[in-house]
Image (cartoon, rainbow, N blue to C red; front, side, top):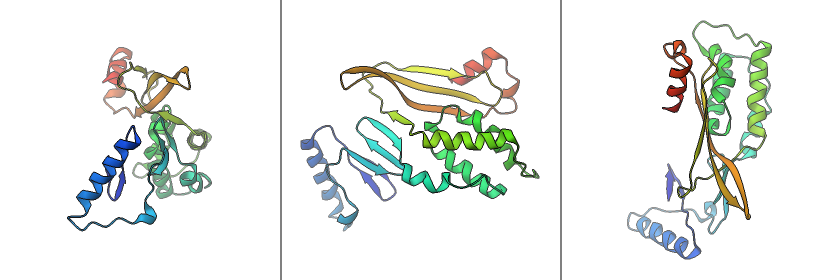
Length: 204
């Protein structure tokens, strides 16, 4: 079971287990007079929408209806609008390969006493993020009985990047999929590291 504020997601491998888990949750709610709106409940679903994502037993995808309005907006015309867009993109950063590298030039606009100047590089970065989010990036859920592959990229000065992969059997075929992308900006002191140090930092 996963709880996020007032959202409760109950998951299981079998319908029998699912019924038991639902019964347990409801039995905990009754003594404390916690009411649940049936209109907002869905039972026995193989796929659901939660917190801006489309979740199934096999994958995690961005819910396109949730991001459509933001992605239709033009390039931000103020620092506040840019900060809002970057916060939005950061929420879905696990779906974006090398997110820190792509957005590095945009984050520089959020510093103090910086004039909002949209250069071609920054406009391209903005459009790249929008493209990545609308390209239906689907992440697979990890199987902890199988081995993992970790790919890292610390070659660029703009940030660290990595991707966690796993090969799974899907519909009878062996496929390698992405579990998540990870990235962050380099700190000022880290930007002076050599290649070997930076690669080790990326692993950590």
